[in-house]
Structure formats: C-alpha cells, structure tokens
Image (cartoon, rainbow, N blue to C red; front, side, top):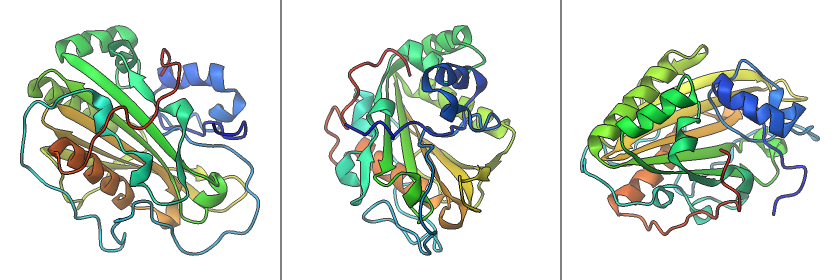
Length: 279
C-alpha cells in the first residue's frame, strides 16, 4: 500500500473528468485548471537540491538525444484477444525505483470509457462506445518511489490506458477521435519527427507551470497508437529539462510487444484496486 502522502497530482484532462476528481481528491487536485488532458500523479512539497542528470525508466530505454526508434511500425492489423489488462506494463518492466500507484490502476467498463474525458459528455460517450463496439479497458499508473522529489532529478510519472474493441473498424474510429481531441486542445502540441509505431500513432506535448519550489517547468507527453483492435495511450509527466517524447514512446513499444506476442502479457497486470466503479 502507498503511504497517505502519495496523492494524485495535477492532470491534463477535460473539464468533466477534472470536476469529479476535484470533489474527491481535495484542493491538491485543483492545482492547474488549464491542464485538461494529461496525467494523474503527485502534489507534495519538494525538499532538497535539484540534481543534474536524468534517470531512465525502462531497462532498455533509448538515449533521448538519439530518439526512440525501437518497435514495429506497420505489421499485424487484426482483432486482439482480451482482456485489455494484458496490454499494460507490469512493475517488472520498469527499473528499480518505480512502483504501481493503486488508486489510478483499474479496469474500465463501457460507462467508465464513456466518462473518461474524450467526449463532450457521458451520453455522447455511451453512444460512441456502442457504435465503436467497445469491449474492455484497463488503466495502469506508475510513479517514482520518491515522488516529485525524484521528478526534479529526472524520473517521471507514467499512465497507460489500453482499450479493446470488438473489431478493427471500431478501434480506428476511436484512434481518430483521440487525435482530433488532442489536436484541438489548447496548449497541446503535436511532436513531429517521431518514428511511427504499430498501425497508427501520434505524439503530443503539453507544457505545464513550474514544479513546486523549483524553477523547472513540468511537461506532459502522450504517445497514442493503434494495433489492430487495440488503442493505447501512454502518458508521462516529468521536469522539462529531462523529458522528451522518447520515454512515452518506449513504454508504448513495450505495450505493442505484448500485443504482437513478443513479450509476455499475463493478466491481470498489474494489480488493480479493490473498487473500480469510478475512473
């Protein structure tokens, strides 16, 4: 179990989702109302000096200066077997110093998918979930054990959302909806020059305000991709000097390897919370 101090941090999400979290998570979840789409992590007071140098998350993480180039672009474009929890990372996929954040790790019903911020409202979301033949979803969040104190040293938060649809056509429509949403969100910038992954992919960046008690700006990156009937969104949050889209893309490669069957994909993975009625 995480300690009481480990509470969700600012998130770049749409208004409807943010309002529900503000009522439940208290004032720390209301740090930045401009941020509408990206991540749930931590808000704590930082103590100590800012260290130089970055810590890389994945064991086989690419040098950010050279860009993330792993994974398979193109290839299989078919229906994948469920459940969606097969297509998120395990704690063992990360380097020492990262842990699952249970309050933000759970399965998502069709109703929860309809309420996840992609749509203008739950009614629209339910209609789309039915139209796209939504099958199952799972969200997994990971955090550095030292929380924001380690973010200013180069570590970062990660959230992975994976959604399965009954056919490839539905997944294509969902992927297109995510691209449209991100491209129309204030402050969200497409990251160009990123190597593609799977059947479709895109990369996004959002600059946040400075991290508490430092002069470092927070930055969110998202890498979204489709592999057959799977749509997956990988989001990272870290300090701007240390972060590029590479970290998010490297985690996406890991997820796609599970979809391709080249990496083990046990289920459930990782462990979920006991209550999953609220996303």
